[in-house]
Image (tube, rainbow, N blue to C red; front, side, top):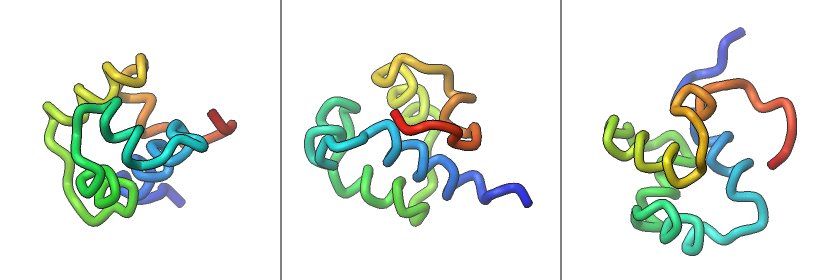
Length: 73
């Protein structure tokens, strides 16, 4: 079964954050902690601009944020 894309994005963000706090990770991404929290919990839709901003900060392709997690970051 294919996971809901918003949930998959949230899991990928949490995995890529690792042990970094939401506050520190949000600052690195250039978004608020509350926005990051809502994205990680799949309770907020993401704009293309924010998605691109996150991919740039994480040095990955946007598509990588929607791939099933195979390993921890």
